[in-house]
Image 1: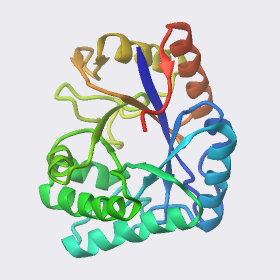
Image 2: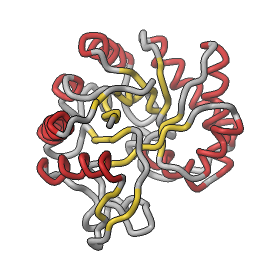
Image 3: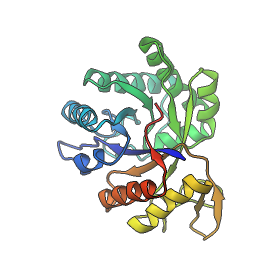
Length: 250
């Protein structure tokens, strides 16, 4: 059994970190680094690159709508060309900070939009494909599923499915909206058990108590979730104890 453990990090806002990045980098295997759309700046990106090198963590770009006021969590409908250009700027910014990009994972509202909106999925993938061409290697796209899967396949980019350890799931496999009860899961014991179950039998418990099948090669924890460090440490310990190899697939 093998799985990747990723976290959204480098999400500095106005010079103030939103997570204990140092502690999180010590536990995870892949870091989704904010690159200026919803959070992050040159200093935070360089700090993430440094931490990734010290802890042997793979770096992925975590681009968002250009919406720092709402932390990228409000759905936008920019023209395709504008969205594509924004994605390109963010990937370029992270690479300019010294990152060797291994994959791309959209953030927040954009993450959900590219699952449902084929036009936005194509715009995001086009930017990733452009960057891949410059690198001379395909950058995988990390996501939940839906329209982004077909867009990535059409562009010849690998798609890596992920599951969320600290978010509530609905019975149809979606995530509970953040303003609804059960949206966040912050109990380290429960989250660790969820991680092992996802790897062992590919299922997750939903907010209504049922279990659904979820395919995931990577498991995500949000750095700004309450008790994020304790949860990450509990997850890593539980996976190690279960004989799961935790490493980046990139």
